[in-house]
Length: 152
Image (cartoon, rainbow, N blue to C red):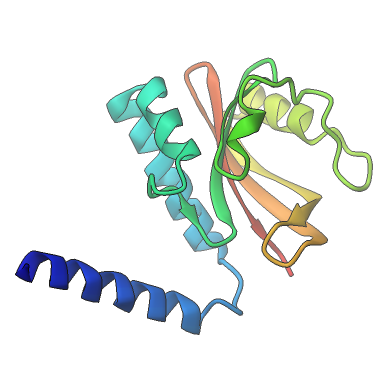
């Protein structure tokens, strides 16, 4: 019973802390930290276990508007913390609100440098508005792992 009470108190504390800052945007540092955690998960536990955790809302890889996404090097969704129903679909021709082929840009960056960032316009599911977004991506073997944050 004491353990349960501690878990409830911890959860309430985290929720209260996040609620106090919910109006604030996620920072580049928070997005980069989540990407680092995701890359470590893929390297440590393998793609199958990692992708399942990324798709699971309770998997620890979705924090407010931050989530992990993964593409293979051909642009196929392997994981999507925003919408797991996208897994298995081809995103190579996905365009942002300005018509930019953003997944193609991510693939080119992953192939040329292995990591970096891409800016684009995307729907923020928290406030349901199209906003400027920047995603950090990193190539991990034959996958592109990414996390994006809104610029506001």
